[in-house]
Image (cartoon, rainbow, N blue to C red; front, side, top):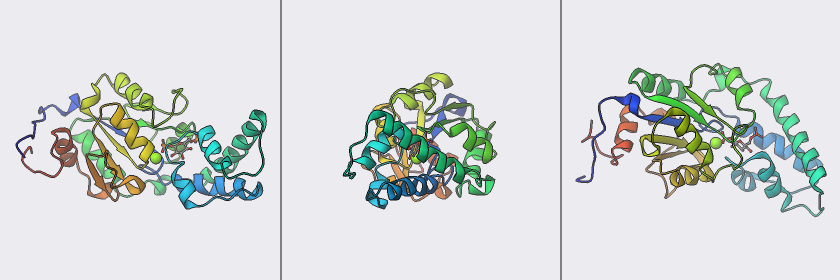
Length: 236
Ligand code: B16
Ligand code: MG
């Protein structure tokens, strides 16, 4: 582990940028159910494998992926209507969202990071981010929130994470991203940020570290990732 660096003692010079859907909250299943309802109504084949390609991708780009299997061709106006219909179904499902939907380990990790002085941010492609954060009780927890309402290019473009780093005033290489989507892992890597891949993205070759979920990630894990040696205890 000779290439291990050292992380400066003041953790307020560092940040963790969390993806929202699939990392902080289990809304990825709500997206799946809403798209499935739309696809069934339009007689378009849709399954979990196609759904995996939608993680982290914007609403309109997700629709384009779903329409690849459609025998019917839709105009731009019709696509807009379809996307709004899906969003209506999704918003219905969000009505039952509550703090109990925060994923295991998320609150513990955010609390531990804040206690150590880390800055914390959200970097999400979702335009529903404000309502989701409100419903799960985390509206005032993050120092910075950059979501689908603030960006013009969705993941895998690095814009969402670059904007978060800029708003935090912290250089990209001092920001660790936690992502559940391959598109998000790529976006973080393109932003020059070390990334921890969880859930569906675990095992990504672009990730500095992979984990099943947030329960095994601690503030010390983040420090090791920042130091460039995620598997070592040397830098603590
Ligand atoms: P909306 P994330 C992403 O959120 C979801 O993973 C993706 O499935 C969804 O299409 C996208 O947000 C847009 O969501 O329709 O609510 O604007 O994972 O980047 O937090
Ligand atoms: Mg996600």
